[in-house]
Image (cartoon, rainbow, N blue to C red; front, side, top):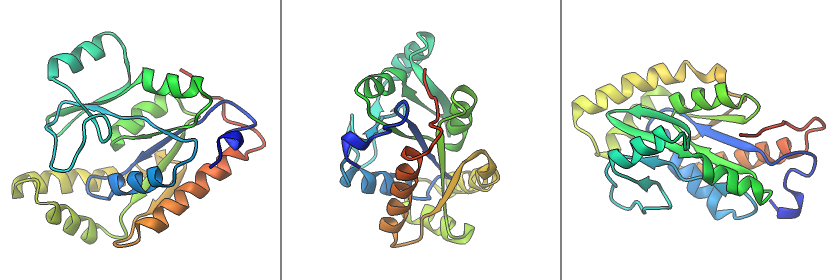
Length: 205
């Protein structure tokens, strides 16, 4: 992913990575970051509490509810959604600044957020990260040990509904247990293919 090759035939692109809770979106994103290159990773703002191992400004912008509401009121978010009692949103400025530098942008959002972006920017590239099976997804959620059994049941029920939204996306990448590197390489292939399209996608805010 050399900078001089980035989207040579059109405007910088927006890649939206989504999928059900517990599918491993963060692990996939970390793998993409480690590859380096010209892609900019937009950081989502959230009102939820920071989990162990997370870093402010890298994993999320952890903000107060009042600050998040102010961002909403000022139309500073590309999309926002309330998920399990917490608010999440992608700051527009982060995306715009990267585009101004000629960089493609990757954003990670929940399925609800992806649907919102698709309505606003239908020519963005939408990638759905899927589990190999619902049974494995349920086990991954249990292994996280970050929620109560009741909360896990709610998340798993929501994940079943989110799996039905796959038709909103352009690509599906299966993230198999222990094979994150394969999922990362497949997403890199998607990015490379989109940059080589004869008719470039026209995207802008």
